[in-house]
Image (cartoon, rainbow, N blue to C red):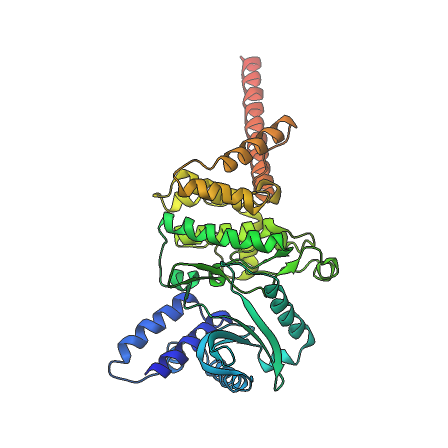
Length: 407
């Protein structure tokens, strides 16, 4: 039964990460699986096919990929594989024992189909090298990166715990104080990364882990980029790198001068999800979600979770300002406000940033821009309404003059 559970866990995560089913469909499948297993030893794969959530072809492809990567993991010398702990669209993660140091580690393995693509291999090694530059208690530590039997692998610290995404998938809404503490730890991790010239670019619940001692770890430097790496930035110009639910507007636009403020936005979107139980913007597909990040006004989190303090809501809104100039300038500034929230004080940096931004724009005679497209649409609507009112008044005036003349 334990092996079945492990396989089902990996299978379910892969189905989610590859976009073959939704969180809700997987949750329903697991609930149904628990009921049926009381009388029938059915596998998650078979159940999801019968429920119509995935096709047989998709299931077989997932099964083949899992089997292939399990075989690959056993080829890595110096490590004893203890079991699978996760899977994603780009790699499998295994729990293993490093024999030379007798310590437990996690090994990420690049699938064969990606190992044959030089671009994916290059990105995989850049992730390991980026992680290797960092040494912080709130960042998953990198140990080694290499190749064995045609497979590329990345060895890192093993975190005994779960991700924020795991909790959210179970329908959990985080207590405000707990959420603030978690976000503070991630902010400290980002401060270390930014100080070392790295922007994470994919801050999201799935990449934030909490161990059994309550220590938060930022993981997955797969999209991290050095701020000084102009060549890579130019090669990525116009391309949107990130996860749709948490991606910053400037990443959607493919800007080459991405900086730490993009991570602040992603962390703000994560914070929003944690305390409201829902993502900031929802739509049927990725492109529509990203359009909303660019154009749609954010519903304040305290309008959804009315128990939130105004200070926490304001901090999240500043973190998620569509124009990066209106966000916190850096994570150190953000950390000051987060620590104030934890101590029950007002977030003065958020107040100051909002007030200065508004006053500066008003002094210049500018309209305070929360969101460009929405403002344009509202302006057009107001203009049309004004024209209609003016036309009506003019028509009535002419009618009155005609009546006076006739009398």
